Image 1: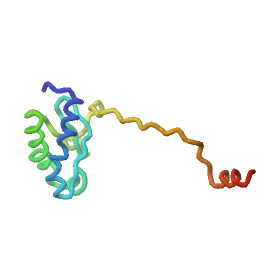
Image 2: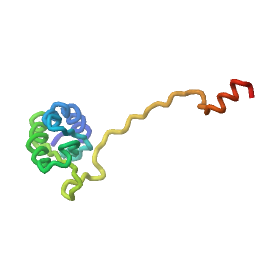
Image 3: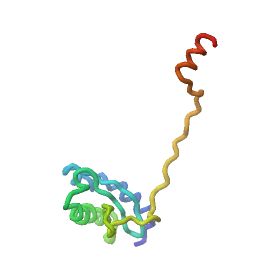
Length: 120
């Protein structure tokens, strides 16, 4: 496969709302966990998370549609806690966006505010 892990991750992230329509209609959801070497790691949530048909949903719905949309060799793994569906530690996950902390006055408790008001 000629795509980098971050490119595959981004493509899946963009198409996930389209793919998840079927799963949503059954009370479930999909969380994108990461990508590595043409394999995308997801987890089914909600009603689909513990469903006995989750393997079928992963392969026949999610993988089939993402292969049509992104690449025909894409592999989707539902990380469900079983040994054969484990996610590698070195899987690509985008860096977390840092939230800039607003500079503000120190926060005081109620007693400190009252002391300030009455001039103590």
